[in-house]
Image (cartoon, rainbow, N blue to C red):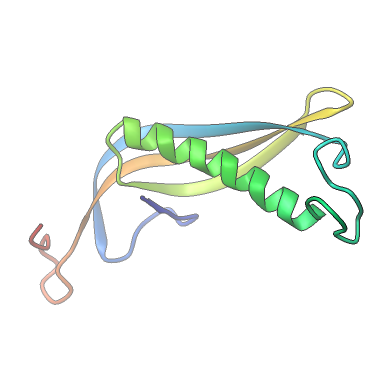
Length: 113
């Protein structure tokens, strides 16, 4: 699955737009409750690993939804977040699920499958 932040895919023609796809991850606003032991990266996760894993979970959910709809790519992927309690935050990955067909480099025609 190709996931890009751009609105198009150079070298591909988007033949079908399947709509918005979303991956949501709830995460603790308290990194120590989530397994972070120290801000210097002592035992457990350090903050950067924690953030990368949280984003990866949200993107993974979004990709799963796109694949279920029959997409082979997601364009315009973005992240959003909001606090929904004093201790929890929502991280959201979203984009547009599409079917994209590679173009032949020299002619612009669809490449053979």
